[in-house]
Every structure is written in structure tokens, then in C-alpha cells.
Length: 349
Figure 1 (cartoon, one colour):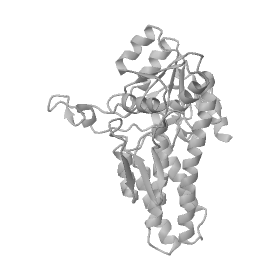
Figure 2 (spheres, rainbow, N blue to C red):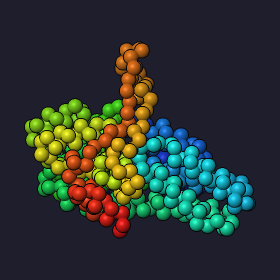
Figure 3 (cartoon, rainbow, N blue to C red):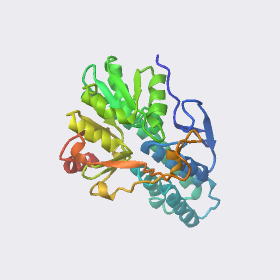
Figure 4 (tube, helix red, strand yellow):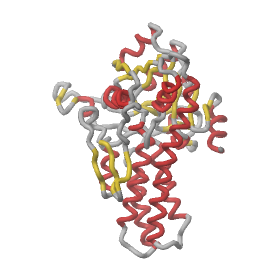
């Protein structure tokens, strides 16, 4: 039985427990949260990260926050809860799953305008639990569909971390790899380190090692070279938001990998649940790109690696045009071009 990774987020009674992803793999540290403000901070400072995981965290923050609203008046509760929803939604702007989860939770209040506060609080917690369970089920379905695009003995390259740590459990892109490896233990995994937060070398390598799936880490700027040497057979990455035309926002550097894969005729797949798709955005130009603190670039492990006073850019995400995407692996199947049509049909299921 393979050694398992630790779950990224779960309930511990009425507290929300998370593994602190900032200190992995050096330490396996569990943090407990009792207020929505604490969870919002954890989302912002990347204690938890990955679009699906952030969506789940947002839903749980609202469940915690709903319980802390002290009133017996439904209208007062609704007003305060709506304010809290807006705070949670703004925690990180690029990923679609957070706003999607907030809207699903808020719908409980909208659809039950005359319900007593205690019952609303119970229903909100129930909806948050549903979102968590649905994410795990969706990831396993993504893995079941996605394993079919991984050739026997393939050398699979992945970027950033789209595993259990980026979701409620199991993973999207790593879910595909888990399912493929279970069917064919001869596949090889290549994980890009993913500067500046090192999600690949710290988190993806950690997860795969804990699951006894062999993985080799490479620097981000080695991708072109190993593709040129024909050492990659397929690329699978996750996504933070997908526009109606298939344009995809993912961790900064994904676009570079996609262009290189296209240049070398290597299939490039995006694995994500339908909750990552934002059909209200026509194309990638409408996806907001989060700009993070330059210190994440200028410092490593708390130590400066750039001369004092030198500025740095730190966009957290980039946009991969749909023309570079071979297919989008979802829980209801693999979407193919033209993406406007296949995405629309997938969202109708």
C-alpha cells in the first residue's frame, strides 16, 4: 500500500484544518482555523493554494463565518453574510473556483429567505461539505478520463502542482498521473520546479514521493532542451480559470511550456473540473492576473537572492491560448476543439 500524502484541508470538528504548504516538504505542519478572517489570510499567503482547494477553503470559511454571525433576524444575517461573501471572493482574483464556490454557498441564503438563522447556518455547512466531497469525486473522474491520453511507458511532464494539495484530495493533473500510474507503472513523471514558489519541486515531488510514484525534478528553463531531445511524450497541467473559448490561466510559466510542446509536436492537456470554467469570459483577455509581492522573487527561504534595490516582477499566472491546448480533461470527459462548443455542452450536463 503506497504511503499517502496528507490531506490539504478538512474539518476537525468545527475547526478548519490545513496542511501549511509554505513549509513543505521540510515540515508537515497542520494549522487550525476558527474564523473566516484566518482562512482568508491563509488563502492570500498561500498556506493553501491551487484553484479547487482555494474554492473549498472559501466555502469552509463561509460556513465558519455563518456560525459566528450573532443574530436571530434572517434579514440581518443575510446582509452580514453577503458582506462576508464579498470579502472571501476577493481573497485571490485569478482562479474561478473561489467565486464559483462563494456563489454556490450564497445561493443557500437567496433560496431560503424566510428560513430561521440556525437552519441557514446548518444548510451553509451542509453545502460546504457537498463542495468538498464533489471536488474529490470530480478529481477521481478526471483521473479516470485522463489516463486514456497517457501512452504506455510515457514520459509525462507536469508544471506547478495540480495534485491533492491543490484540491480537496487526489488532484487534477496529478489525478491523471495517479490513475495512469495505477494502470501502467512504467510511466515516468517529470516535474518542473516552478519558480518562484517552487510548487513543483516542493509540492508535486512531495506528493508523488509519498505515493511511491517515481518523479524527476527539472528546472523550468530545461523544458525546451529535454523536449528537443525527445524525452517528453505528453504534458498535463492544471488550470485556475478557463475562458469560454478554452484559453487557460495557470501558474506563470505554463504558456512557455505550451508553446514549447506545440513546437515539438507534444500533446498538451489541461486537467480541471468544470468549476474552473468561467463561461462569462469570452477569452483569456478577460481573466484577471494576480500580481504578487516581489519579495517572492527576490528572496528564497527568507534570504535575499537579488541585490538590494533591484525591482522584480511577480505575476502569479499567465494565459495559454486554446490553440496550444490538445484537450481539456474534465470530470465529464475530454473536451476537444472547437472549445466554444465542447465547453458549452460540458456545462449543460
